[in-house]
Length: 57
Image 1 (cartoon, one colour):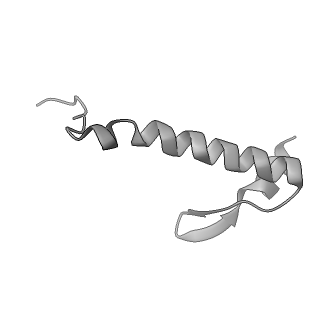
Image 2 (image 1 turned 180 degrees about the vertical axis):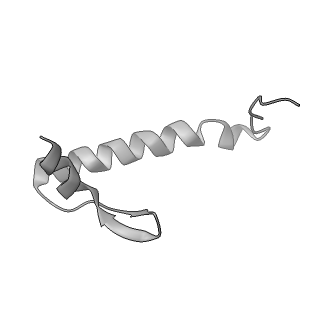
Image 3 (image 1 turned 90 degrees about the vertical axis):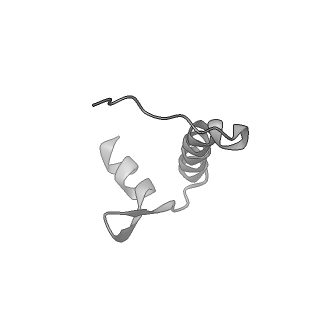
């Protein structure tokens, strides 16, 4: 049984994971700089991650 992750064959999808993570990081950074909320769908609920990050600092 192989646990190796299969890579997409379509070149458009090959970098999608990295691009989505980069976009999410930029959205959180923008929310921090502008003191605005940044909502995500997490655990079946809509959560403001900018509030969570403020509590950690």
